[in-house]
Structures are given as C-alpha cells and as structure tokens.
Image (tube, rainbow, N blue to C red; front, top):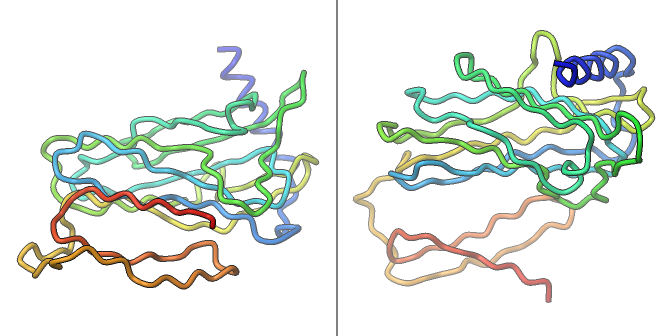
Length: 224
C-alpha cells in the first residue's frame, strides 16, 4: 500500500508542477510498432520505441486499442534499457474500457538513475504483450495514445522537473490473420528484394520484397 501511495504522490506532483511547453529541441518521438501475426498464434510482443534529444526523466502514456471481437488485448508490459534502472515504472490495464496506462519516474531519491536520452537514435524501451484468444477473428487491432480525462495526453517530462511536452506520436497495431488480403491472388514465383532509397531526414524507410509462398521472413540490415 505504501508503494502504491508513493507512486501516486510522485505522479500527482509531476502533473501539478510541470509547465507544458514546446519540445525544446528537435521533436522527440514515441513510436508504437506494427506487427503481423499468423492465425493460431497465442500472443505477440509489440515494440514501443522512443527517439529523444532531451533528458526525459518522467513520462505518462495513456494507450488505447480496439479489437473487433474483444479477443485481442494487452496482457502486460516488459521494459528495457534505461527504464530497467528507473525507480518507478508502472502499468495498469483496463480491459473493459480498452485502456492501458504506463507511467515512469526516473528518480525518486537516492542514487542517480539514467535519463531517457537516445541522441536521435530509435531505442526500444518497452514491449506490450498482446494475447490472442483461440476464437479471435482475423482483424487489425490499432494501438494508439489518447487523452485520458485525468492524466491528459501522452507527456514527456524533462529532468529539470518543471517542463513537459507531448512527443510526436506514431501509432501502431497488430494485424492478426489475413486482413484485407485476397488469398486467391497470384503469388510471385521468385524471391525479390526491391531497390530501397533511404532518406536521412526520415526516421523510417520501407523495404519492399516478395516471396513465392507465405512464410516467416527475416531481413538483416548491415551498415557497410
């Protein structure tokens, strides 16, 4: 009980003293991954990335999802990198209302903990475990942030403890089964990898490829 009260007090203090402002540097980003899952899979992990050039020390992430039949939903969150060393990182799932709240505070006293500073690099900080019940129908389940009536929108707070801002959000989701795909369409006869033209000013690039049959594919990227 003490720990729960402590967490709540830290979040209330953070929410009450922050000054909402423009991102002081280049726009920081929160990116929710998009994953595809074959029929029959019991679960999948959806990565959540951040790209920051500021010393982010607190965050509030209200997340929502929408399942066609209610049979695909979050079941937990796993944390990585700097978040493993933070004093408080917590999540709560409200399945009835399709809401997931994730909060973090890097330091509540004692030894100094690392802030969330990625130097413009995309970094996985958490993975949301999505469970898929056996009777789930084929569907796309969008996962996005939303404005919570109490906590507000997704917010990053700086290490100074008095400035916060909303990062740029890129929504994601889970594609389960064959959604919007015609199984009767002609499959390619050969493996092909399309020409790619990376844009250094864009955090994302698309790689087009085709295979002669449906299967799992691993693409390895090398920095030559």
